[in-house]
Image (cartoon, rainbow, N blue to C red):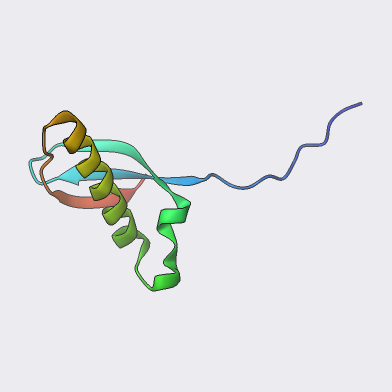
Length: 76
């Protein structure tokens, strides 16, 4: 017998491309959907910026190298 495909949930994250002030670019940065909850009135781009800045700060803390500030964020 063939199994029926489950409907399941959609992806648990959204992808963003980030451009930094120094000209560097990172592609396909993952941000969890739970961090992009718009119930507080902030736009998705603002929430994604906050989440990615938090990721960058954690990476900088572990590696000892700071990233430059984010110039722009676009959905991938």
